[in-house]
Amino acid sequence: REGRIRLQPFRVTQDQTRIETTAYTVDAEGLKPDPKLQLRLRIPSEPVFVGQQVPIGIEWWVDERLQESIQSYEIRSELFDDPDTFRFLPDERVPGTQQTLNIQTSQEQLMLPARARESQRGDNRYVVISSERTLIPLRAGRFDLQGATVNANEVTAWRRDLFGGRRPASTRPIFAQDSDRTLVVKPPPASGRPESFGGGVGRGFSFAVETDRSVVQAGDPIVLTFTVSGSGELAPVGLPPLDSLLPAEQFRLPDDAISGQVVTGTKAFRVPVRVMDESAAEP
Image 1 (cartoon, rainbow, N blue to C red):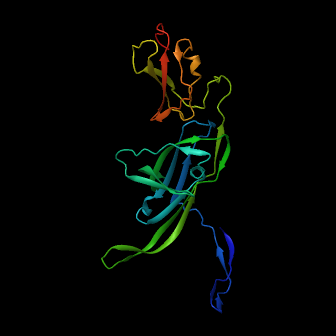
Image 2 (image 1 turned 90 degrees about the vertical axis):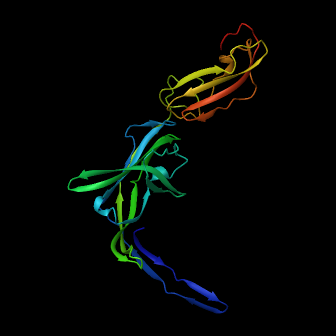
């Protein structure tokens, strides 16, 4: 943090001997943003819903003259540091890409698959390293996010080691910060919501049913597989009451609740039932 920091003496004691340093102060100045670095967090400007899959992106712009001089860097954003509020789908590595964008959180360092491109802005050329993620808000609210930051070390002088390789001789810290961002998350709409609504929010949902056998006798067990597909968050999706789909006079239903399994954009529920009426053709 900026300002004057007073450090108390360090003390060492051995048996009856005690020595200590004097107290001293450190004046810490804030780094000014360096125009050779830029950072952008791309989030929707319009409200989104709890459970919605939201595409977001982060871009790090580096002046091409710094490509060989960046020794290390650290990117931070509140968006990646609150797992109780924001969840992310697993990052899929795009074939043919080897770049990563490293994001530091309070718990770990994220290595996000990224792409690199060149871009011109004014008289300067930049290398732009960008990564895309899919965010899922877990609760409603207005979230005012401080601008994402990047701290880096720029090598200002080099030296040769014993084997002729280049090693940093001196560095200086450089810094960039994005603008503050606001993300508004709303609860799912209440109007038109069916009684069986389980929290799934998204687009292109479809529902299918299939059986493990097409011909059975009365009293035989079969397994019905209910499959929900779509681009939304499927984890909270549940089956409606089964007796509304399978009449009790035709089917004997399981007593236990049926939990589904989410696999790559689908959620499947396997329901064992017994056909009790020979006239039952399909549910």
